[in-house]
Length: 55
Image 1 (cartoon, rainbow, N blue to C red):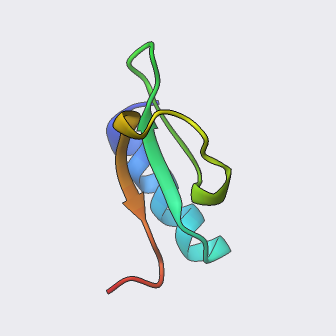
Image 2: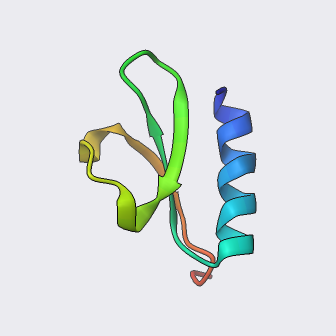
């Protein structure tokens, strides 16, 4: 998915599930999102983390 779509999807997930969401760039150049507790990939691939509790 595109970066814009990934950010929108991640924000929606974070606010509806009330969990931190990681946006990362996959090896093929696409972006994906996953709950932070489930991410076990390379830390350098992380583009952004959305935490619904952070201000």
